[in-house]
Length: 174
Image 1 (spheres, one colour):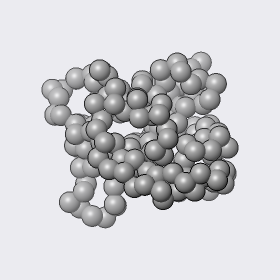
Image 2 (cartoon, rainbow, N blue to C red):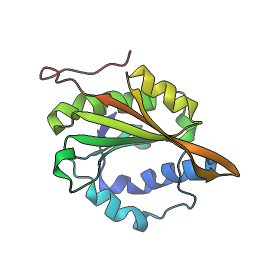
Image 3 (cartoon, rainbow, N blue to C red):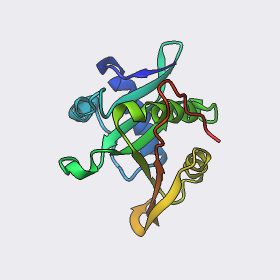
Image 4 (tube, rainbow, N blue to C red):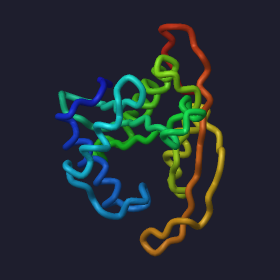
């Protein structure tokens, strides 16, 4: 089940994100977060423009996806959003990220989002493959800007222009 996140989901969201921090090389954050530290972040994701979606199984949050503004306050960029997604490690390889992306992309026309992009660490092969499956293209690369676990890595930007699908269209990956 994919649905809009509620404040009660924040603890699960933070725990899932912290898994990626502990694992290393999945995010540029190095220190885990508390629920309190992510409260403002959660509240800034307004459901009618920049939502957080959660995937749940048996009423337990097992993954989430955010659509975030790109360079907030710059009105000419209002139709572009950054997409980020994380899945509980116990549920990797089960298609959860695919379901989240499918849902979010399908909602983009209603949210008036015309372009989405993901920023990922350049050795994150699984995410690169997933994004390509959805038709994302490499829009940019910032080489050698991260130092994680003693490695020098870069950031990749993968983007997708959202086609204005008819009302009720359900996006499916290639």
